[in-house]
Structure formats: structure tokens, C-alpha cells
Length: 249
Image 1: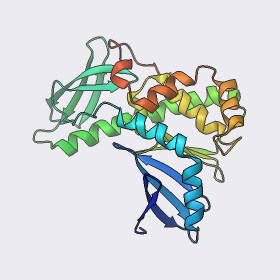
Image 2: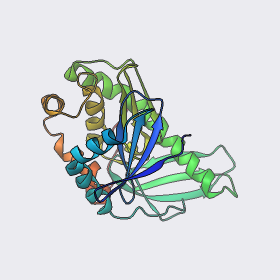
Image 3: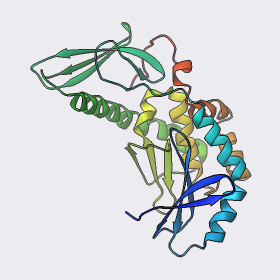
């Protein structure tokens, strides 16, 4: 992993990482909005400064939004904690069982049951729940792709789910592959649909320019509501009383 260097651009402190990549990429990292710029090897410092200055309004907007997000609670995966699934708040109930570790959602009770072997550590409990979330998304995403690919007018060659710390999704234009953040399982279905539409639209337009947002709006006129929710991290405010999750066929 290349060692980053620090660059001061006006009053912005920028972490610069030089890698064998094709394009410059700006990333704003939580929780305080640290700005990181990944650039191709040999990129001139003047070029980096020019890009950062041109994007200053966008950078400050997202840094402010990130800094204003409520702090993320430290989860212990213990009975009584609040966990979210498809935008609904559930009370976690951890119980010991001799059978294989498993998760069961009980919407009518507002409870998320986590069954683990006796002595399971925090990391082990977290992994069980993370595996369950991934499985739910893996079953749901193909259904949503079948719905939204014809609307956007493009088809992804491949898709995947992974842990992502700074993005809700990404798109590899050359491979026509979409990646989705596993954390989207916590958010309302409308947020997952928005991210899918967003990433599919990148197969028409690589940049976040006027054409890109026009295409997003054509496919999903209500895109601004989930976009703002994901940008400002207002999951707790969005969460309603527990309701049945989207049923899978």
C-alpha cells in the first residue's frame, strides 16, 4: 500500500495517495470528513491543487454533512440494543443455542433474534449478523435489478456486496460491475433502489454532471429524498415502528 503524503490546499488538508490508477478520485472519509485524493502515478501537484480548488464547494458541503451526522453508537451485540433492517428499528435479542448460529427477524414483535453458541465473542456475534445481512441483500438485489435495469436502460454485467466505509456503492465502468455497501440492508428499500439506479446510471455517464443527474431523475424522480437521507445519515429519524420487511418470492 503506497504511503500517503499530506498537501495543504488553501485551508484544506489533503491526503494524497499515488497509485497505478487511471483517474484521479476524491474521497471524504468519516467521521470528520478527511479529504483523500487518489491519483495516477506521476500526477503533478499543480493538477491536484487545481482539482481540489475546483471541487471546493462539493468538498465543504459533504464535509459539513458528515460532521453533522449523529455519532454512530458502539454496538456490543447484546440484548436490548437497537438494530435496523430495511429502515425499521428492531430490538436485538441474543440467546444461546446448541445448534448452528442463526438470525431470525420477528417483525410483529419488533425483535431481531440472534442465536449463537455459548461464549460467542462480540466479533463472532457481529460476523453472524453481518453474514445474515449479506444473505438478505444477495436475495433481494437480483429482484431489484430486474425491475430497475429496464427503467435505466442498461444492464450490469456483474454485481457484488462488500463492506464499504466511504461509499454506498461504486461502479466499474470497464467491467460493467456494480458494488453495493452491505450497510444498505439497514436502510429503507428506497435507499437501496436509489443506489442501484445511481450506479446503473454510471454505465451511461461516468461523471456526476448535469447529464448524469438528469438521467437519474428520469429513472427515479424521487431520488433526492433517499440521496439526502444517505448523505446526512438520518437513519434513526427515518426509522418507523417495526413493519414486515419486503417479502421475497
